[in-house]
Structure formats: C-alpha cells, structure tokens
Image (tube, rainbow, N blue to C red; front, side, top):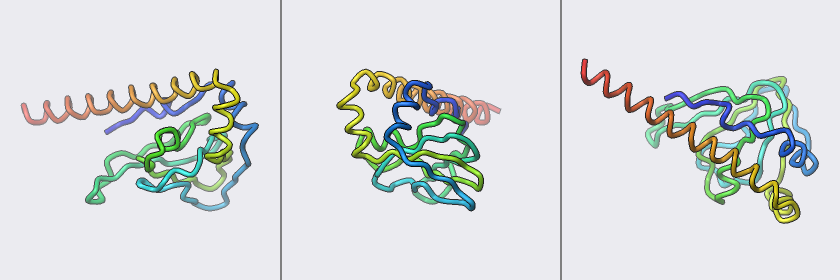
Length: 147
C-alpha cells in the first residue's frame, strides 16, 4: 500500500506556531520516536532529514513504509484523538526535529483556536491519503484476481 507522504505536511504558519512551543531534537543514530500502539505523548515536527513511518499488521507483517517529508507533523492523529499511535516513526542520523509536548499542544489550541482549522486541514489530508491508498490496494488486488 502506498501512502502519500505529503498528507502529513503542515503549512508554514502552523509550523511556526508549533515551533514556538517546541524543543529541538537531533539524531546521530537511528532513534525511535514512537511505536505503533504507544500512547501519544507529543508531536514531532520534521525540519529536515530522514524519518521512516511504518505500519505493521497484528501478525507483524509490514503493511506500509515510507519516508516523511520536511514539514510533516508526526503523531498528530494519536495526539488529537488521545488514542495510540497508528504508525511507528524512526528518525535516522542527521535528522532535525522539533518536539511539542501534549500539554504545550493543548495550551496552544486553547490560546490560538484559529490554528485548530489548520490542524484539521492536516488531519483531513491524512484521511484522504489513507482512503486513496486503500482504493489503490483494493483496485490492484481486484486486477490480480481478474487475471
């Protein structure tokens, strides 16, 4: 299944606002940011460098894996929904990230409610990308069965 990595990218105004509430993180080696199924503790903003996002089945089979793009908000659906992360994220050497805690994010949303619309735009893009990936997978599977 192919998921469009641009779906995770936020606009520059939202990123600037989040960065004001964040702390920097850099990686000299591979670093797990979060695992699929972990309780959400915060949000990561990808400034530059490689981060791999992946999802596995309950049986451990990798379903998707892709590189996040600069400007991506990693962990957003889990944080907003207060549900476990649905993906795993691994930062690779040379990555530059910013980290926003749950409390800082919640405070920012209360103090700047107009940013909530920008957050919803990112979430909507993620939903559209997930639906497109499912449609692509079903269509591909249907073609294979027809042949």
